[in-house]
Length: 335
Image (cartoon, rainbow, N blue to C red; front, side, top):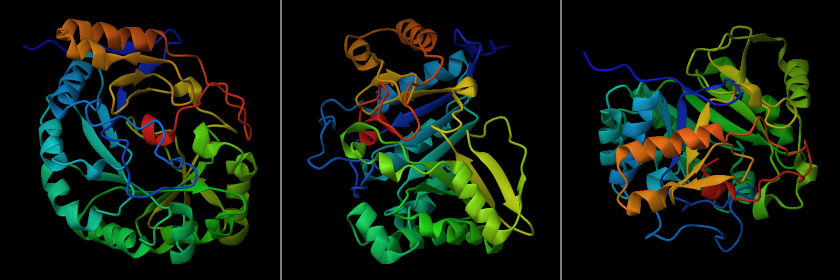
């Protein structure tokens, strides 16, 4: 009988079971809070881990106790060969769940192949339901393509489909109720994420910060009481609610006002092969160097375990301010 995977714990007794993998820093949008002009900090093609290297790291991580992998970017669907990679990833024994986060621009044309390859659960970034505003936020007039991708995913049977909206005061906060209203008539799961003013792209934008308490108050004032939904084992950090009679759900992710550091269960692997234990703390381990030096799987496991041991108790980014130790760009870190 094969040995059961061990359980990974950090020094604060948190179980680590979730690995976010960035496949590329490249993106076909330039969202105002994510990617600075000039593409600062993006790895070159030579620096990006190969698919074979990523699969090897995931296999080792799963053997240690990781159960869930989320593919991110940049925009992961831009990377050539991604469908074949997903197919191999989904075949890894012991990996319970593979999810994808995408901006949706290429989703309509790739959704069927992704479904066949093994993806069932999608997070789609969408910060506005208005075409012109979408273009202003992302730098590209592609709202109709993204919405077509959402509709295609629904027809194919992806579930859940989560829409991730970064709530920004003075930018899209007048659309909060309309986003929530989508859940009344569709099975979409809307997630409101607090704006995080990190990196060059987020510098000087602290005034856009909007706490989830305000978001929730506005939604309940317009649409009625939000009823809490019990989370499942592999669910993310969102606190999830439903409106009366709704087909979908409304969730709130509050990394600043009500941070979830005490229950954080994740590691992040950047496209350039840096292993990161906290999104909002810049401490990283250079796993790529070990891979290129020909390390064995035991060495990879040791690096993963050490990164987990070094995982901080919490981040130091104060709500609404840029006071923390995170200066990397979201497009490089993987969000």
